[in-house]
Image 1 (tube, helix red, strand yellow):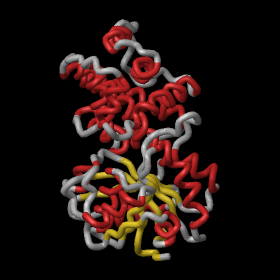
Image 2 (image 1 turned 60 degrees about the horizontal axis):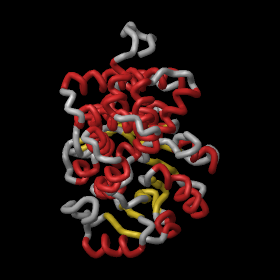
Image 3 (image 1 turned 135 degrees about the vertical axis):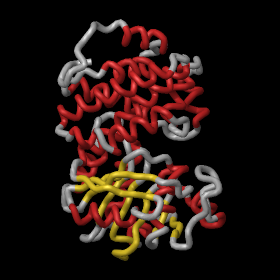
Length: 337
């Protein structure tokens, strides 16, 4: 097991982009569960399906066997969709060593349990392995292309946070560290739901004023839930909070925003998801965040309307009316929306 290399588990667009970035600094292994697909990546030296044109560095190796991939490195980075996180972690765990350190770049909540990825890790493996989460305003295409990017590495283990940040840091990427793992996970989760809402407003052609108001009041919802769950406000006002929120709500590289755009234009939900062709984290997350808000008795009206659109067939224009018809309230700190 190599302490100077890192293995990325998950060969979708985000996992591949992170592997490309990491391989610029150190030896990196990229694992994916489909052997034929990984063989194609090894042959082409790029991921033509998800990141065409982004050539793999020489230090990036390809592996289709999970045990071998896990054995290659002390440090592991999971970049799989939230619905696959538990399964991949369970299958990889038998290959862990006593020195293994586990990070993840997965955003969202587990479907059915509402658990953060860090909670799943604690449930399955306890706290014996150093853990970290990576989040922030990061589109995979831009990271793979080497465009300037900043992100946050949060861990309750300062050494691991700094080591992982150092691996990512470079001429075109700035990595910050934090110990607020709850805040970083929360910001990266709720923003996916709000990006669907932002897409809906633009799909309905409601204008820039509407989008700006939605993003601002959406941030207020994130902060209220963060207060209830023990996140720090400065985290939610940073890269993993407002930074990621702005990115996903305003640019069409966001799958969540594109889903909202399609719904606002009248495209049926199943067709919209099929046309996007990749996992839209905000779809499942909307239900889990709505339930989380109810559990903590936090008022999140935008999230609630997105949930109703996705799961109760509420027409988008009626959802907008429901939000605008709410009683006048104070915008001051602590006031419900």
